[in-house]
Each structure stands twice: as C-alpha cells, then as structure tokens.
Length: 298
Image (cartoon, rainbow, N blue to C red; front, side, top):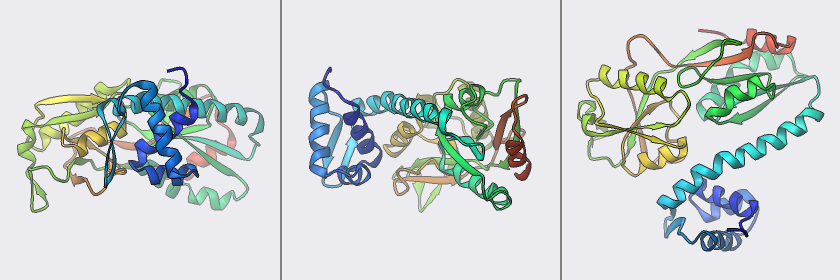
C-alpha cells in the first residue's frame, strides 16, 4: 500500500474513464506499455484485480468500481485545492469564476446562455470550474467561485443564496441498449415495475428520489427497488451492465452512448427539474450581477 503514488491514481482514473489503455495513454501523453505497467503495479500493491481485459478494451471489476468511486472525488478535491490556492493570488479582476456541476448538459447550455455577456464584455474571462454534487454549494459559500450553475432538484441552497432558473429540463429514462424490454427500439414503460431504479448518493438524495418516483408513477410503473451508487460514472456502468434504469438529463450516457439508450419520459405533475445559476445575496460583484442579468430566466 505504501508505494501507491499520485501518478498511479491518475493513470487508474484515466483508464477507468476511457475503458481503454490506449485512450488513457493518449490523454496522459505517455505510451500504452507504461500505462499497463502502472496499472499492474497498482493491482499488485492492492492485491486485487481492478480491470478485466479483452480484445475490446478493459472493464472495471467490482473492486475497480469501488476504488474509482473513492479516488475520483479525492483526486478532484486535491486539484480544486491547488487551483483555489493559485486563484487566490493570481485571479485578476476581469475574471469571473463559475462553479459548474460536472454535467455535459449543463456546461453546453450555460456556454450558450453566456454568449451575449461575452460579446458585451470581451475583456472579461469566464473560468468554469467543474464540481461534484457536494462541492457546488460549498464552493459558493466559501467564496471559491463567484456563482455556480447546477440543477435545482437534488441540490441544497441555504437561505443566504439566491437562484435564477434558466432552462426547464424534460426527463429521460436511461437503460441498457441490450435490455430485453427494448423491442424494435421501443420500450414499454409499464414493464419497468420489476426493475431497479439507480440513483447517485447526494446529501439531498431524498429530494431527487421523491421527484423521480413521481415521474415513474406518472408513466404507469413503480420500481421494485432503489439502489444508490457513489457517482454518475458508477451509475452509468451499472446501467450499461443491465442492473437497472435511471431518470435524469440528456447526459446519462456520455461515457457509453452506444450501450445506454435514452427514452424521453413524461414529467411528473408539479415539480420540474431546471438548470439554475446561484449566487450569494450579500456578496455579488458588479460583473457577476451583469452576467446573471444577461441570462434569460424561465
């Protein structure tokens, strides 16, 4: 255990996300044989197999999934700490720091929304910092970022924060593309009553759970079980492997687009999930206010 290095952890995370030794090597700018050697050393140090190998690439074992769910947030936290220390002393006044929940769906929409602001303020740089669930509110309250962008369901917003919704999201159901319930590209939602619904663990998980159960009932079924997973990536792996379904945005299959199929699903009556921009009531710079005002609300 004592000979595990940050380099090994970084390589392991890259392979786990690419599910490819060559893909990880390309991203890390090292050769594939070096990636293979470092993974073998890590497995030897831990005395467990982290990946299964085949001609198609690699797959995480159960131990690999667990290690990824533990290492990923710790590694990201370390990176954020180093970035924050650097930003504390090197961020000029014409830079806006935006903490963005790590979702391709949110990043793409937010970049589209801020184009008018960027045209009006060509000298202001908007720096996006990708955050995990539990980091979004913390980063804003601690002053690490000027504002944050996230979903409004599944996140906690204390009274000292304000929010502005800017896009209503229609939910999608994600399920393995090879699931036997899919016939001719169609899915009979009512038959999902015998399936497990997969959720990601968050401090406000009960909020998201109730919302997603309402959607299930609206569409004529109710899951037989609910399983919580440590990260969105772990959820994708579970869906790909046929362990259940999930309900969420359009990026639930960003790692496995060919192996996870999305089906639009009717939203529940009442609550709808939205993208929101959040800020502190009593700590709002002029530039941040202009950015918020330039975004069209819903």
